[in-house]
Image 1: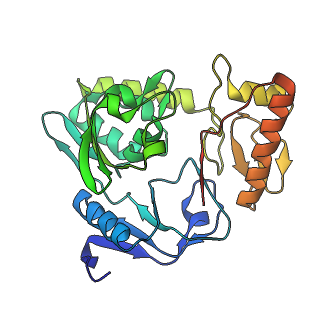
Image 2: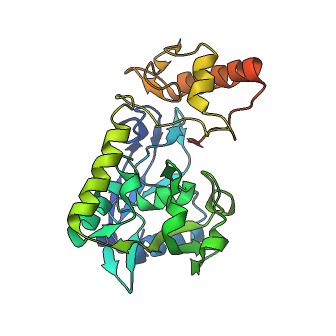
Image 3: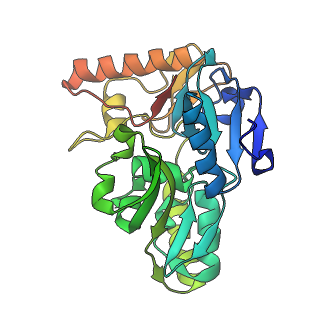
Length: 289
């Protein structure tokens, strides 16, 4: 670490996934770095790559399933990268959470981010997986994404990001998202608050408890939760993991589930839905090794 200014980072050794991930299970990583800015983030990436150290970039750990045991990768957590600034539009660093973003939008009168209400994500995570609900997606609001690619910082157009339903080029090309310039509409605080209230009401029925959010993508023309319910799996359990009674596309950790329990339950769901409907469900969540 001699080539890095340690004042630019918080370091956690070890990093306990079970304490950090919203699903509440998983093993540990030997170390985790929390850069304070975009610039320190890039310096850290350069250092780790020069040293040949494998790493993984994470935000809120809300749609991930960490493996049990000890990970060989260092963790870089973006949650201290909180800068939002006006640059002929709004530029937002990758670690800004949806909650912080909505508070900013309410304060300055920006409409367009309200669909992120209640989603436990950072902007980087939302951009990575093209987060969205009810037909509204983060890709629809992006002017450009700044990313670290092959040792260089580049600005990527929306087309270069390769966005589609719950998918992006970032999932395949290994690029690291640093931030993005977003185009939203100027309005007033009351309008933003009213739209936030609409999304809060829509999400009020979602299951409580430790989960990863929706586990599976919706197959074209179908709703994954309805398929799982139709296969008779509501409240089905494997070890400490169970399918939610309220929403069958949620897996709940009842307090003592291992990641292996959840992986096994996911396999049960995929097999049952295929047997019933001949449809192969695809995971929306990401597996961490």
